[in-house]
Image 1 (cartoon, one colour):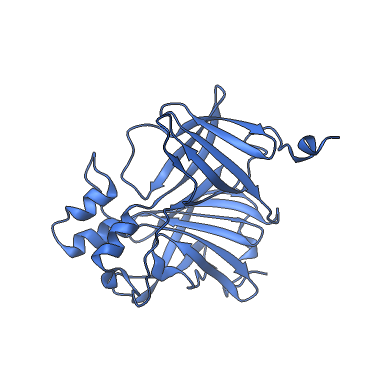
Image 2 (spheres, rainbow, N blue to C red):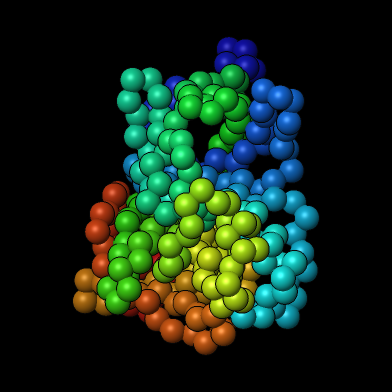
Length: 274
């Protein structure tokens, strides 16, 4: 067997897709390329969460909440991308349907064709011409599950996915964004600082499950990094740790609206994974 054959990935399908995928290239027909952004996509059973952060990250030291962000830091945050929803396949194309989107809703659907070239999975856009290169990252295969959530108090959508020792979590913003604008334009044109903070208050985080808890490592909200998610089951609800715009901690109560894979039996009452 050749080295290339040994590295070839299984043919892309909904069954073979679960895993953590890292993007190494985004290329456009006009010659533009992005090889520096941090892009991770965690595909669970059907449901997925995706986080994309550009290079040039500011120093967020001392910025411990939305209210503490500087204007320059806010504009960098507004350039991030990320989404969560369901991956479906139809007529040879994959579509990443978005329940949650860090940027305002796009005009075009996120659909593309996937194929393998050695150890690289190539994605070619259908409605927008682009090429992306994806690499499967080594990760434990179990436990594997994902769920859609809804905040019992506010109705906000949420999502959580876990594979092995890695998890991703997403929560939509509470306010609507103006149609036809990028998030940077929404933030720059906000009527006041409080409104600009509301536009940015959408969380997509990636973290690790350890023997002492679930901790965020990267997030669209940098002050969440290093903090515990503290997922707990309580009377059929999922509780997670959060913080308001001033940094005051509180607990969110989520109803599970869609569960895929193994149930949340690996989250005991103290929030520490076993």
